[in-house]
Image 1 (cartoon, rainbow, N blue to C red):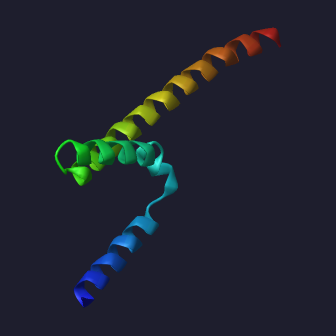
Image 2 (image 1 turned 90 degrees about the vertical axis):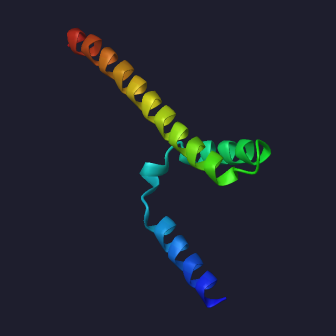
Length: 81
């Protein structure tokens, strides 16, 4: 019983120590992947991990696209000056 409690405390501490910026897209992907993995053969943890990776990848791609659009808009504003 004590080992389960100790493992839980360590896991919660590790989760609390991560920065929220790294988790962008991970939470939503993990939830969807966990549910899909659970229904696809009781592999919820594996599905959650894969969903998290995909969610982070998708969030990074969206951030790059948004940054690219902002950079394209900036030169037109500088030409007006």
